[in-house]
Image (cartoon, rainbow, N blue to C red; front, top):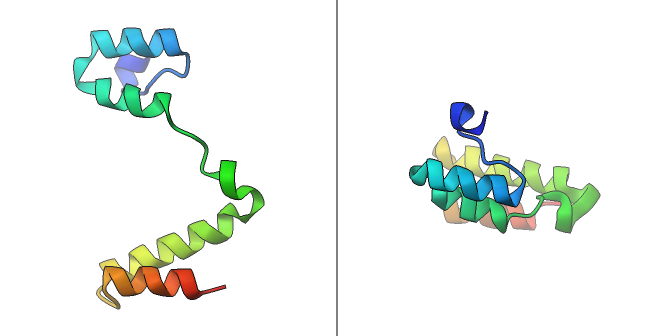
Length: 78
């Protein structure tokens, strides 16, 4: 299934086998091994942080502000 969908297996042994069988995905297997949930640190506050992040990205992509200014505004907003 992982090979068909190019998804990294969550079990370590299966992920290592996947990396061996699909070498182009090894870097992602390594990343997933050390990944943590976005909500792990922020918990219930994650949705507020996510909104600030995607609002900053949109502001930058649409030319409303520079990337640096968009991130400064995100940090300053409540």
